[in-house]
Length: 74
Image 1 (cartoon, rainbow, N blue to C red):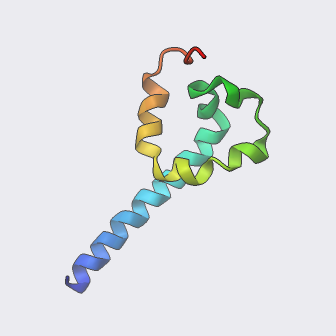
Image 2 (image 1 turned 180 degrees about the horizontal axis):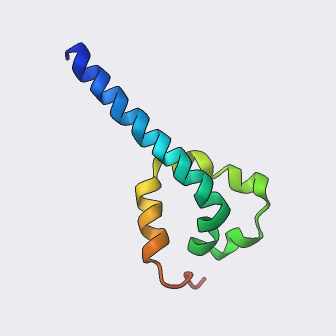
């Protein structure tokens, strides 16, 4: 693998994670309660535990956030 290829991969991963971190911060404040009604009563400290996972899985969570019409029935 060339240095240019490694730098390109590192740049793409950095961009992905930066977008994910920005999404995750918005998601824990607004979107988590939309997807999961149990998140409505969670304290902020507990919601911050979601940030790493949301930053990595942000495309899936973004899709679920905007396509889910009603909260799941438990």
